[in-house]
Length: 177
Image: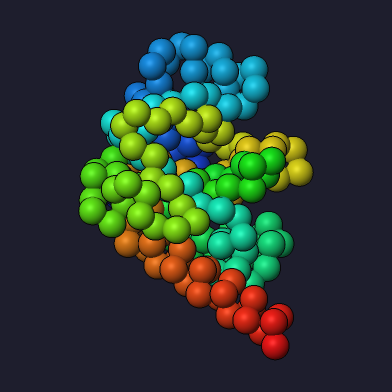
């Protein structure tokens, strides 16, 4: 839709564009599209157009101060400003970041405790864009992907992890006293 000289895109347009963009990370786009249709998850390769930082849920919940889904989504949207999905059965969150992140010294060799940066040899089950209801899907978007190239800042992800680890340690010390 065009308004004046500006082009506006609907949420549906952005979700479709994000879906096409994510499919560029699939070994076989048609197979990934079928996986999304059948199970809601498609196996995508990290390291090309994006990579992911896997974060233990306890760290995220400590940073947020709750495990209530809406509050977690609001907090992560505000501090990471990029797409994040959760796998409830493994108790992990995945922040999508630029592919170059896994080559940065701070992320190489998984030097960040309670997190892992998935490099170019990693494959990841990624939910279909629009799959964001935790009551309907084990693996769902907590912060939806907003369009092609929409990624979290690796620096913001690292700050979230450090803050969550600090808050978790402080809570453990308080419990010991």
